[in-house]
Amino acid sequence: MTKLLSIGADAKTIKGNKKGFITAIQYLSPYKTSGVNLCPNAKNAECYVGCLESSGHMNFKQSRDARLYRTKLYLNNQAEYFNRLTKEITAFIKKAERKGLTPLIRLNGTSDIRWENIGFYYPEKTGTGFKPVYYRNIMEVFPDIQFYDYTKIPNREKTINGIQDFPENYDLTFSYSGAPGFKKFNDRALKEGKRVAVVFDKVENIPLTFHGRRVVSGDDTDVRHLDPKNTIVALYAKGKARKDQTGFVVRCK
View 1: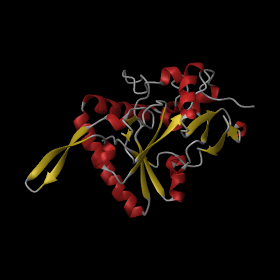
View 2: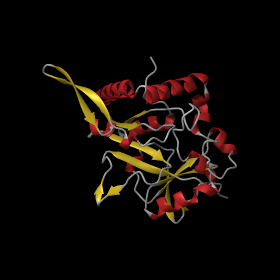
View 3: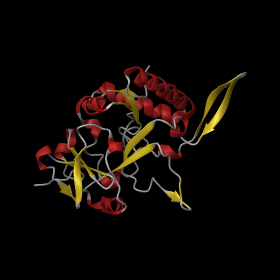
View 4: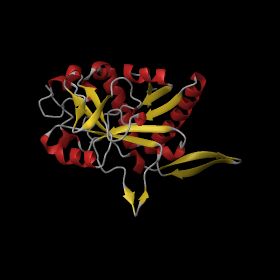
């Protein structure tokens, strides 16, 4: 059976083990590759052209089929999807405990879903059987576990009437694009002092500062929640992104 979460699936997350973390990532079908758009701002950002799914083992048929399976389960049977996701996260937490590591969970490995807004019922065990309990999001089920993601949606961490209506255990890094149609989103994220990830064309071209902000490496590990806000997280282009001409990948000389 295809699992929803991949553990230690790439070199970057494995490097996080040395910092005391173990990471589980979910990879769904990006943009419109499943027939449903799971990356609502990808057209503006033009990141779908050089998407991460085109790099390394992600481009293998087996990997593409697995992403499509997870995506169809999520879209067509959310009750079963969240039932399985909850069980897999529970098992992952136990695995982390056995290894003496802190678990991190990234649900948008190749998607950009507002998980903070997706509620569901989960059957909780009682003395006489099971009772369906409603949760506003998956983070509410596991309040002591750190979730994180990259996003191209700038207004997700919203405040309503002065109250932060966003899971405290869900860390977001805004994902920059140099495409002309994405400038207003970049400007908003930078103005608000968000942590911003930028894909540069080559490692040797990564600057020390970008838009007046300090640049930190985003390829050493994927432990993003430890990076300060108002910094630039530098990534370098992989797969088709190395030939990107849309502006998504930033070219510095």
